[in-house]
Image 1 (cartoon, rainbow, N blue to C red):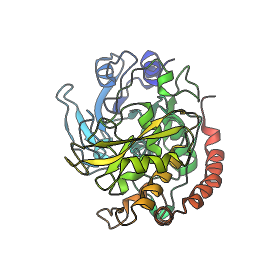
Image 2 (cartoon, rainbow, N blue to C red):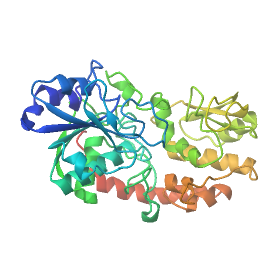
Image 3 (cartoon, one colour):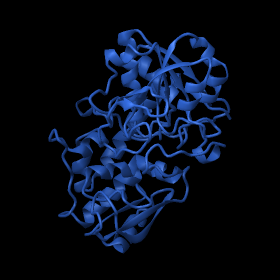
Image 4 (tube, helix red, strand yellow):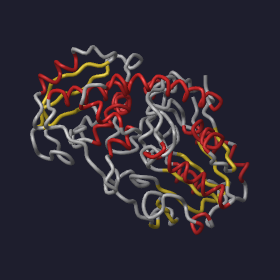
Length: 382
């Protein structure tokens, strides 16, 4: 198996001789020997690297989720690092004046909430506007490209955790998404994609020979990413999603929860591919910092069978049924429910509180069928 970065450096770079190259990347942009793309581009005799671009969490992956990223000069290459998660989400004219081509090399994690793919869309917008080229170096979808789940974001709820009408679990690689963004959603830039060699749609990251480099501190391993499609919804509530523990998005709880009761009620639903274990934990940051929380750890027992979004929805419904006076949904700075932005709909919040989420899950079936039809022409791998 070979990733887009290695193939680009081997031969495809020649297609961009004498072009000024900008690189949108972070710590995940490494070759198969773990050498950073920044170093490889900077030292490559055939590549003229003139600027770096940073997504959410910063180019070194050390900035907290949701926190603005500053632009600055890279101390190693002395190149400008332009933040696309700060004052600018779309590259400005001044930024684009530094480059002829932008190369995108970031590791996505397979869920629509993860913002890297929207930074890619914003770069596509800028490339079209300022007549530049975009090259997308493909990497695996770490939770495979064989499964899709969820609903389509309603137009009035589009945000940077759901900017485009794609499913919660999209089952696509970044190169496939770029092609779909261009031809379905109007991001009509000059686009080149460098596909991988040897990747199959049913492969999880654990099935590849690659080293896993966490794009952010809370993205730990394949089970976490598989659950994230569902458990990310907890970020819009007053429940701990496990940030501040060693098992974020696998551990769920709150001080008011009885872990044994929750585990029993959850497991009695016999959801496919997942089991809950009662536990207590003390987050060292974020929600309930330094407080004892009761809760559960979700264990993936069959990643082929698990329905990740259903798992998260039914977990929330169970907690709301057990503790109806305790569960709360948070609003953001614009007085919107952050949960609604994640869910892509305003209906799910009420259905969780009234134990009617089967209605939402049934509606997802028709929406995912439509999404699968839309994405089909852009799939690069079998």
